[in-house]
Every structure is written in structure tokens, then in C-alpha cells.
Image 1 (tube, rainbow, N blue to C red):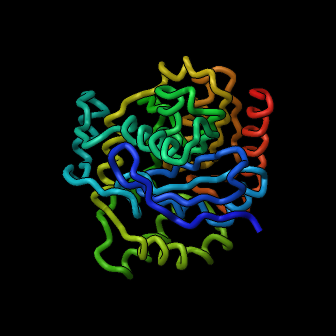
Image 2: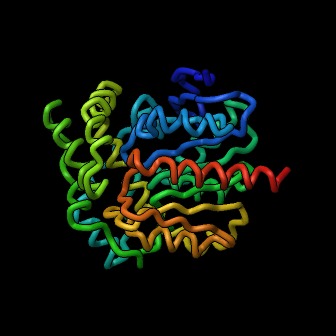
Image 3: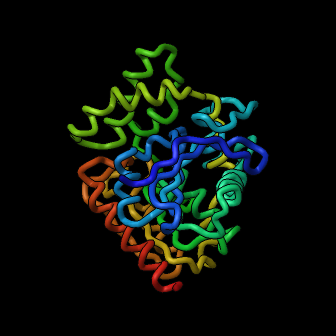
Length: 304
């Protein structure tokens, strides 16, 4: 049986961060950074176990303002008017914090766990946070894997209308409404039929609901992404082994976002996964896990 450390709370960067560890304490440390409004459990337990079985000490955690980590206050729901002002008039979005603060949370958690450097795997907003760590704290990063993410380049095409509607929808008012929304959201984001995942959706929704929702926190996270601007020019200076994974049918972060990330980082490898949307569906795990495994262990071997 692989070692498994149950969820705990760490005090890092002045806030509480809930984290959980899978795998051998002596194995290569691999931090999984989740996306906008998504708790750490969106890195599925079995996904984490499979990565741990490849020789990694896998750490997942709740970002600030989500799950069991510290919740902030202030900030309003983003309006379409603000988005238009940002896109066309270049008027910045106001935010309580930015991606650099979330990057410092991650580095602070590594400090608490005594991890000098780790392999970073970020999904969506988590990819943006991982990129920010690679830019601001390069000595802490052994390898970078950016999944279904982007550079913040405003020239990347926007989400599809359906995906944007999911992102901007008002929060559900009841538990039943939340369950319905959860199923609908993932149907839109996965693009297509994934029966294995659909069968697990009710249990995943229940677990997320039980850990606690924070709609205002999701709004603050979205503001943090938009207020942080483009990393494209800065990413040219990154010299960390980088893998970019993106789905060919991603409705939320356009596939060009992944291509732009890979093009912006010197020597980055790009893996486009056919038929993958803005999700990590079970049938695509083998391809994703193999790619992360090969990339991270390859970077570790070169550094040794």
C-alpha cells in the first residue's frame, strides 16, 4: 500500500492551507495546483494514487478562498460590463489579491513541508499559478507542467459562449440546484460523453458540497486571474523544463492558450490531447499521467 497522509492544515504565507499527501515521503515531490473555483479533490484520489505509484510524493491542496483553506472577504461578482471594459478599454479589473499571492501561498506550503524544490503540475488557473512560481521563484521548481492553461495573452480567443455562461452563472441557491449545476458544468467543460466520469459526478458533487462552497471566493479568484495580466513576455526568460498539455476541444481556455504557453517558454514540449475539453476525464488519465511521469522524471535525471 502506498503511504497516504490525510488532509491537514498548514499555516503558510499568513493563511491556512489545507493539503493532503500521497506516496513515499522520500520520492520526488510533485505539487498539484488546481484551477478556478475547484477544490483539491478535483485532482481525483485515484489520479493522485496513480501518480504516486510512478515514484512521486504527490501533494494536493486547496488554494486560498476554496475548500478548507482560508476564505477572504470583499470584492463583488464580476460583471460583463467590467469584462468589456478590460477587453476593449484596457481598464484593469479590481482584485483583493493576484496570482503572485497564490504563488506565494504555494511556496509557503513547500516551506512548511520542508520542500526546497518540487515538480509543479497546474491545471487551468493552477497552470497560471505554476507559471508565476516558475517566474518569481525559479529555484523552487524542478519541472513545470501547465495543463489547459494560458499565458494571459489577451489575443487568445475567448471561451465559447456556453463555457462563458457556465463561468459567469450566478451561484446555485439550494443543494439540489448545486448538484444539477455540477453535472451541467462538467458536461459543458468535458465536451462529449464520458460515462465513467458522469457516473461519479453525483458523489464528486456531494463531496465538494460537504467540504463547503464559497461562491464569493470563486469571484475573487477570477478577479485575481484577470488583474494579473499577461505573463507572455516574462515567460521567455523561463529556463525550467516545461511540458504543456491541452485538449483540442477545450471550450473554456482556447487550445491556442496552450500553444501560446509552449511557444513562449524556451524548449517547452507541447502535448495536444485529441478530444479533451477543459477537464481531466478518466479515459485520458493514462496519456496525461504517462506524460507527467516521463517529463518530471526526465527533468530529475538531467538535474542529477
